Image (cartoon, rainbow, N blue to C red; front, side, top):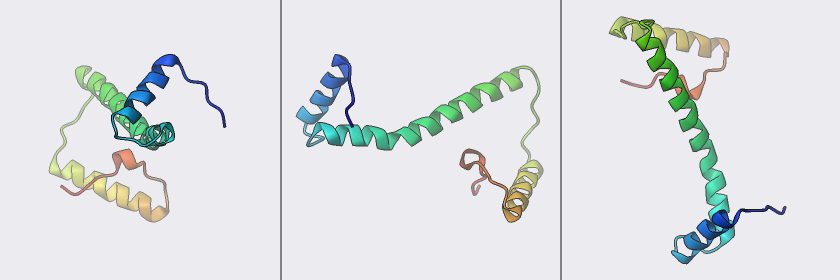
Length: 95
């Protein structure tokens, strides 16, 4: 596979290798590709937060009480038992 890079990207890669953090340009590129899923997840979370803030500013939110949290956890467990896919970004975690 051949990839064309801008001079700026080539320079960035060269600097990473020269810093000693990476042994080769290939290592830099592989590391960048490995971090893409995290970057994508962070972008989705930022987008979700922006949407949530807009809903809050419009007064479209409810208070997150212990009872509501328990209901969310129950619904998630039921969906999981049914085999429904649950987005990792919104799965409840232990409190």
